[in-house]
Length: 193
Image (cartoon, rainbow, N blue to C red; front, side, top):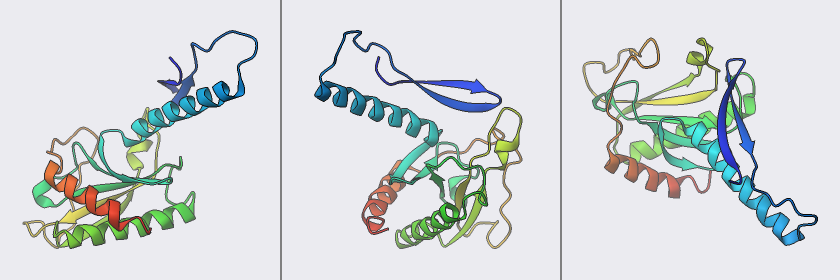
């Protein structure tokens, strides 16, 4: 299979490895066939990369530099407010590694908050640069921003109490109707990003 994707663990880091097999073992391949094979390879490789980067998230929007998604299992119940994650496609470990990417990510986060506010999804937002769970054994840090929507519940105007470790929470995702509404609004609102 051309462009198959395989995950391998090496030195506690996830490495994506593209594997090309099944290429014809003949002398010369016409240029147009080489171009077609290369395009197919790149498309399948990027598809594997994108699915790895999204992890356990629903994709809401993307461009060449970022994903905007919402978790399958958010840190907090949806009743507390919607949760959206901004993930750069560049492989950076923390917010201070690439200040320009970080600045663009926060600008995108603010625009996503504006869209969510227009959709009346919540009344307030907390933005948090994350990635420290990547410091745990057998993990790798990857900079991303969480947008925590804040609804008027018992926790209103108080600090967010987040889980202390991965897999210590079990919450339902953003409802499909809200995901679809947000994805559609983001598609048109962020075109002129």
